[in-house]
Length: 169
Image (cartoon, rainbow, N blue to C red; front, side):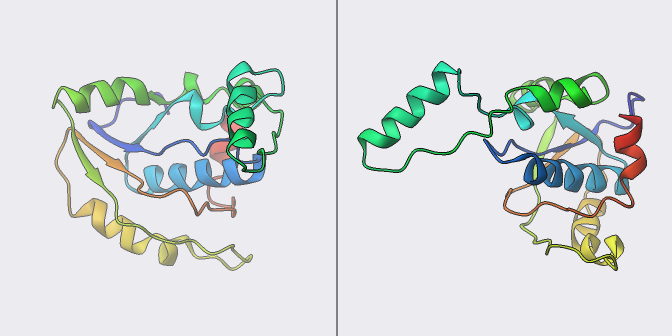
């Protein structure tokens, strides 16, 4: 996980205030794509940081929602607990560093086409589910490239092929 592969990365973005299950499904999807395509997953703590009832920023955001007539969002009150429990930052490439390299044109950014993962059964075949994404990534073999997942509505909630990765983490 800390070994430096070619300068090829996968970027995924945070899903603010999603619950533990949804957040882990989003991370699981990224880990599978990165592993299947020999990419380094570029991680930021914001991907697993969640709201906390004592957070000024969260309370301000909810007050503004109420003032505009919208319902306040529920907090999962997790804060940074997932990052502290799993500590992915110590194993993965820094998304902030990769973003700086993208901004300075050292790394080319390619947006992955949108794809959907249905809630799996025990018979999920990752080869089928990720076939189009794998083909797209493999059609761009150049170094100094980062692929960005373009939507976070779908996670992957089947952990058989990524189980060892999470256990090692």
